[in-house]
Structure formats: structure tokens, C-alpha cells
Amino acid sequence: MPPDLHRLRALLADRLGMTFDEKRDDLLSEVLRTRAERHRMTERDYLDRLTADPDRAELRALAEAVTINETYFFRNIEQFHALGEVVLPDRIRARASVKALRLLSVGCSSGEEPYTLAAVTAERVPPDWHVSIVGLDINRAVLRRAAAGRYGTWSLRETPASIRQRWFHPRDGGVEVDERLRARVQFVEHNVVNDDPVLWAHRSYDVIFCRNMLMYLTDEVRRGTIARITRALAPGGYLFLGHTDSLGPRPEGLQVRHTHGTFYYHREDQAAPARPIVPPTVKTPAATPQIKIKPMQGYDRALALLRVERFQEALAAVESMTEPESRLPRVRVLRGALLAHAGDTGRAAELCERLVEDDGLNADAHYVIGVCHEGDASPATATRHHQLAAYLDPGFAMPRMRLGLLAKQAGDRQTAARELDRAVTLLRGETDERILLFGGGFGRQPLIALCRSELQAVGAVT
Image (cartoon, rainbow, N blue to C red):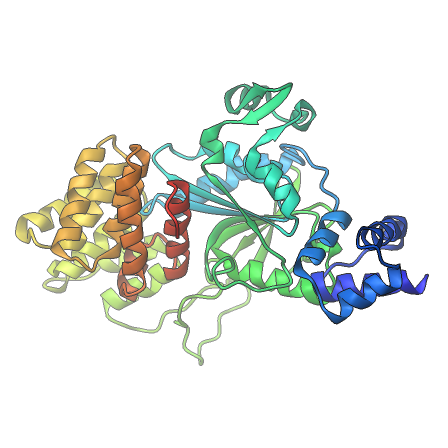
């Protein structure tokens, strides 16, 4: 191997975390020659300069030159069948109380994958839900094309006819992605070599796609990327890799799933709970993995089960409580929240309405009622109860978030921006218990990220 090519490979590995097999040597040699000529330097001088004083713009240009960005909509369509028919129904049940889903596309290239995710969620997720999709890539040029949302018709070669007719419109000899899908997607320039506490926040995403990218990463960067992805998946969340990638048969914290002719990964519910609830002396039998809860009062036991998203067991713990504990307002709110988590919004609303009859100043009860009415074509009723919750407790973040999302849905961008911005501020000081009860499985940072994403969608600066 020529020494300059060897130096380029080392620089790409060190600065960008990229590695390439020998089949790419001709491409790398051409890129080195072209970039050196652009700066009117010899190849050796170019490498000397970039090694001594790394230029972010030049590194970005290198990344754009060496990455392959050929892709198309619904590539490996069997994965999207699994997403629509298995994964999304499961996550909809898990997120029933917050009615929000977050998806991440790592190495999104020119945008076909995140827009495909947007199309599948638009078809499968109830229309009153809020879906946020983030597309990450190191290549600024392809991200610009992705944000434009315009493609040649060849990009739709695997797209089902019904999807093509509904979500793509003719434009200048090609097609343009429907603005409703584009509103769901945010593109971010990011190098996976670097951590980012917001992008990779703990328990942030319901679904992550990271396809055909791991094979281009060095071993160290690959391990770090997998660790961050696993950390960022919500308990019960799902990971899709490319057909060339594998985490082996027993990846830590993940279960291998196989449906629709494709493999993918499911993060176990008990993986990385927010705080340990298994006593150190308790050993779980290998044949029947379970989380064993040490004896505790019914309310605390239910919270511990909720923390690992074991909703039915948490509900059973609350319903087994006897008088007078079961009549306490906080217990009744917990029961209502758990019923909402389980999708039984009718019983949840009825329970909290009875609580409001006893105590009209209970902000939490009004909030649960508001969430329940969001899904039954009663946005005015939902808004009224969220407004009451926010008025009764000015420090309560969650009703502000819901008011912002409802306003955005109604096209009131000014109100949406105001409420979402207030929610971001209040979420920083929100109690852990309210985050657990009303966050729908999202933690503090993912909720803040969701609000910021929606703020950007309504044109507000964050």
C-alpha cells in the first residue's frame, strides 16, 4: 500500500472513525488526489497539514467524498413490514398515555430512510399522536438534499403504490415528499465518533434504524456507537440493523427477534432501569428471567413496576390496596395514570373525574382527564383540563407540553411555541415522580428533546 494512502486511512480512522476494505483503495486514492489538487498541494503536504491542524470543514469534505449514499425508499422492505405490523403496535400500547413516539435514523444519507419511517408511522400511528423522527449523518451535502425532500422517480422503485400516491407529489420531473411527512423529520449533522448527551439521551427512542453503517466504523467507534444506541433505546424499544451487520445471538440488553423474514432487536423491559429495584441478595432464575421486587407498600411497589413498564402488574398492585390507602388522591391518580398507560382511557377518565368531584384543585387528575380526551375527538375538552392543570400548579410541566402539542395540531403556531418553550423550562425542575407517572416511558431529557423538536417544527428558535 502506498504510504500516503496508508496515512489517509489512519487519518480517517482517527478523525472520523471510518475504516474501509482494500476494495475501496481506488476510491480513496482518487479522493486524496482530488482534495490535494483543490488546495494546490502535494498529497504529502495535504496530509501533513490535515494531521497537524485538523480542519473541520476539510474533514467534512473528506467524509462527503468517501461515503456512499446510494439508497432508496423502502429499501429492505421486509424490515418496514416488521416495523408496521409488530413494532409500532407494541410501542403504541406502551406510549398510550403520552401519545408520542420518537424514532432515530443513524447514517440517514439523503433522507430516504427517515422519510420512509415517516410514511410508515403516518399509515400506522393514530393521527392525534405526535411522531418525531431524527435523521443523523456526517455528510452535510446529503443532509441538504434530504431537507429539500425532492427525489428522482427511481428512488421510489420499491415503494408500494398506495404510499407513492398518498405521500409523494410530482415535481420537476421527479417527486417531492408530502409536507406532512417532512414536518415529522429533523435532520442533524453528527459524527458518531462523538457522544452527544442530547442526541443519545438515556431511554430516548422507541425505534432506532442503523443500517449498513457499522461495517464502515473502526472497532472502537463501533463498540461506542452500539453502546450509545442501546443506552438511547427506551425499555421495550426496537433496533434495526443492516443485513451486513450483526450483534451476535445474545447482545447485552437486547433480544433477537425474527419476523417477516428479517432479524431485529428488542430491548428488554428490565434493561437499565432508572434506579435499581432488585435487592443484591436476590438471584433471578435463569430459566424464567424476572425482576423480583422486595416487599414494599402498595404505592411504592406500583411505582417500581411502572418504572420498568410492567403496567398490568403495577395496576394490580394498586387495585389490591385496601382502605383507607386506596382512597388517597395520589393513589387514585396513579391508578388513573396506569389505566391510561394500558389504553383504558375510559376508566382512567372516569376515575379521575370522580377525584375532581371530591377535589377540584387536583392538577394531576385534570391532566390525566385531558390526556384521555385527546384521543376521543374532544380537543376542546382536553385543552380545558390541561389549562386547569397548568393554572392549578404553575410548576407542572406536562400540561404545558400537551397544550403546545394540541396547539400545533390545530395550526396555532404562536400558542404552540409559547407552551412548548414553557414546558422545556419547567421540565428541568419537574419531579421525578411526575416524569415517571406522566412521561409515557420517556425520561426528562427525551421529553425536553421532544419539546425542542416540536419547537423547531413550528419555526421557533431553541
